[in-house]
Image 1 (cartoon, rainbow, N blue to C red):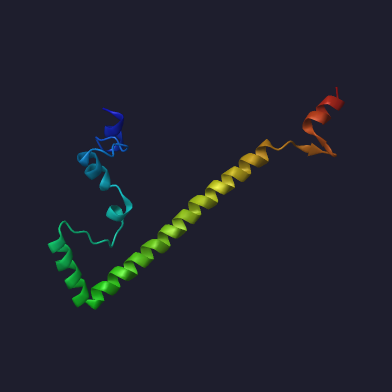
Image 2: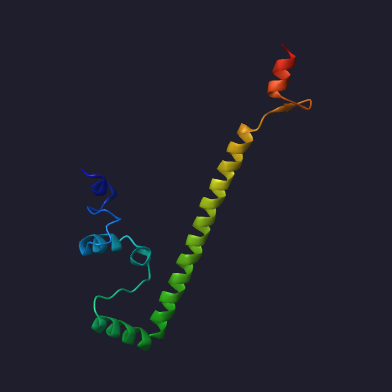
Length: 114
């Protein structure tokens, strides 16, 4: 199994010259994986989809509300990741700080007690 196969796609993600590679990786791009996104395969299909949405206000509002809810949830998820990362950095920095005892660092205390 190649590294690309292990990632779920048989093409190199940096291959911008191959149409096959671009098409294979395009399915992983955000607009294709987000809910409430309407895709189309031709100009004719785009026109059909657009006309159907223009004729159905309820469906437009459902899509809009779904997109807004998804973005809010993603925002909260991203904030949670950022908060967790910052918390881990702060904990790491605190663990690397020299301990101060009576105005002296642990190294100074150890040296004085020798």
